[in-house]
Length: 464
Image (tube, rainbow, N blue to C red):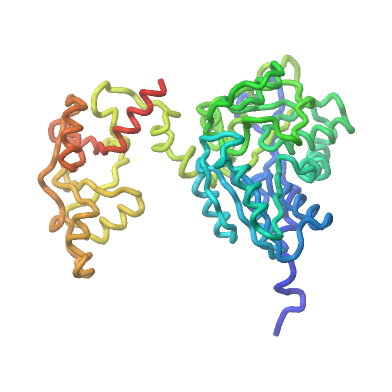
């Protein structure tokens, strides 16, 4: 018997859970004389503040007749707006195409695809006017696809309206009408403009503070009124190389510039100290809020945002190897080849197999670790071989049952070992012979060095 309250044409109830997110106070981190509160926008259905504007912009387009049944939603997005739009589009039965810069986390991209969105990846190293700039690509697609609606969050008035009518009133009520400052970032400018307008009506003395990534032009714009050349930054979702149309920068009272290293470190500290798993922009906002709070001479009540969940960044800012590879954390330097080892044996970081493990075990560990070769270590931790994808293929191509064979039947035991004191030319010689370097200190296995490890090391040296 069919439940009379259900229907495939009825929007899912999850849309009713957008907004009304909780507010929590920071209790363990140093906030100076201030009280600092976090608006947990990671509690929205797709895990970010952008769910609010996605629903607002789609419903406004429907009301105005710009989006009709059977239409296609198109948007240029750093990921989170795309997630919100994909959720709303799926709920309302629209096709959706998202144009996303290629620096976005794989978690976000996988999430929007799972929601049914079509993804077009574009270059993240180009600026406005370039044919592959993500907003220009989205605008071009809109002219090519019949019935397409370009959301354009950067110029859509329904974006700040969502915050003026929902986020602002929620904060005001949760803070019992006692609030001194709000720290925001600017991606599209909707949060700044919407909150600024609301608080200007209820209490004009509330300060709107900008936290901006190093490389974005907005910090300098606030401080000097000049448009500087944009740089690059790894934090996702905030910072711009232009002033968005809907961003009312006149509402900003002060601004703080936060580099990627500080953003990621503060976000990770937030998780350790307060148990809150926030995304990369959360680190920027919290770092700016902490600087503001620590500069104050009297007690103030301050709010900032956990803009999205850190679940979307587990492969990046919460991954120790990614952080080291990108140069955001510094490992102790030894001044020798051991500095090139990304996964170190003494710290238990090496993905390995034993000679008596099966080839299936080796294959699974390669897939899980996203590596193409594994060192083979015996019971005492001594390197006795190496096995790679080609070794597996030779064994199992004609007979998949060979996956049950032992690693020692397929591994290479002619090892290319180097001492940590060897030089880069020795390393290149190993690579020229088509091998991976195994670094040994006596009988002690330290780790592997691959071509990618050497390239990462050289790139970081270039950046210094």
